[in-house]
Length: 81
Image (cartoon, rainbow, N blue to C red; front, side, top):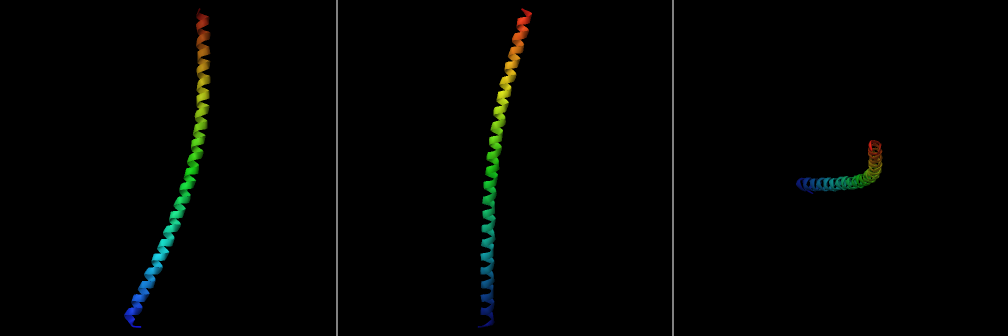
């Protein structure tokens, strides 16, 4: 084999190995991003459920507060009469 053919073969092998390694690394990176996306979605769903629960509590507390205010206003109104 001539020297130039050995150089070309070596460069070809090197480029092929670099391409295979690059594709492998990119696939790992893509897989990790997919996993992170799933984890973020689960965390988002948990936060959403918590926010809905807190909103329900707020609604109940607001209704109780409005009922107490109404009682207070009625009590003050009946005392004036």
